[in-house]
Amino acid sequence: MFAQTDLTRLIASKSSTAVSIFMPTHPTGKEVRQDPIRLKNLLADAQSRLTMAGLSEADAVTILEPATALSEDRDFWQHQSTGLALFIDENQTREYRVPLNFEELVVVGRKFHIRPLLPILAADGHFSVLTVTGDKATLFSASRYQLVEDRTVALPERTSVENDYENPVQASPPARPNVGTANIPNAQVYGDSPPDFRKTRLQEFVAEVAKATENILSASPQPLVLVADAEIGGHFQQSSDLGQFLAGVVEVNANALATSELHSLAYPKVQGRLDSGRVEALNNAAELLGRGEPTATNDIADIVRASHQGRISTLLLHDGEPIWGHYDREADKLEAGPDFESSGEDLLGVAAIETLQHGGDVHVMSSEELPTETEAVALLRY
Image 1: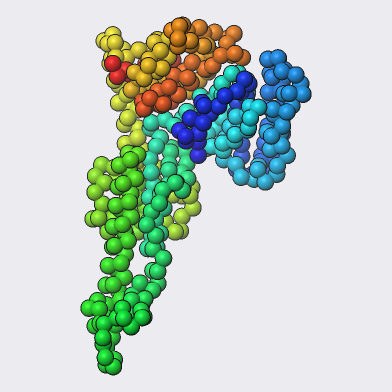
Image 2: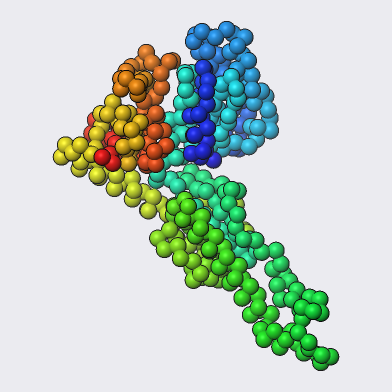
């Protein structure tokens, strides 16, 4: 999944020539065979644009060579989502397989064009999914579009489920009570029956998972959906102190579910909460603009300037065509127009990047959802 850390790396890339390619792909079906051909056509377009920008044909071919190799990689095309984004410069080629329905697009400029990927980073698309079974807990990072396992976090592990009760009984003599030679059942030795002992161990494990999850969400707050059977889910809710972070519970054994099934069950539990932020921001924007309040603006120059100053709390922008231009922060000068397509940048894309980098929220929507005759609205902190 494309994450904000990926965005940061793309922004930090130092290159004289940046190529951004977006194309629809197909996870299955006979259309998969057509995808490499589509990429070759887009690479031919990119090569033409690079030479028009002043590169020699040989240099253009060299820059695009890693992406050209992908077009011949059969295994690569067997593991796709619905959209492919490639970012190519003279240093490296970055590829992102994402669940977005891209239009074919090639952009060659001084910076990477990331606007089509913004829906993945939008504030109304982020939540976590925690699956807990009797022996394992897994945390997923999720969006409106997909979920992937978060391998950067460490959750408690439980490796001795089958032997929870037997292991202490079979321990070395010094670790066991002196029971003499009498044939006393294990349950009498420990005061618990095997089912009671296993239940206690399960409760302890779930409590450890709940505590670890609280720590993770305190560092990176976002809604959580728990997927677990009724017993484990009950133990988790009794042990946790997640409060409003816990957006919903899906009572099912996660072991039997594919990732796509997990997503389809979890997203409805959190959709209302995620949508509410966008709806509230839209209502606030319409009200503030209607009253002429200075804490909302739909002027592109003001939006770009405020984004660089870290003054945008929420940015609402449409999912349509780029607005090409260039903003000189030192001179506080903004220029825009189609002439900047090859040498400039998408001004709204830049504003979104700056907003995210300064801790603001970004919502991407259709132009019909925005207030009348606006391409973007910024709600300002001050």
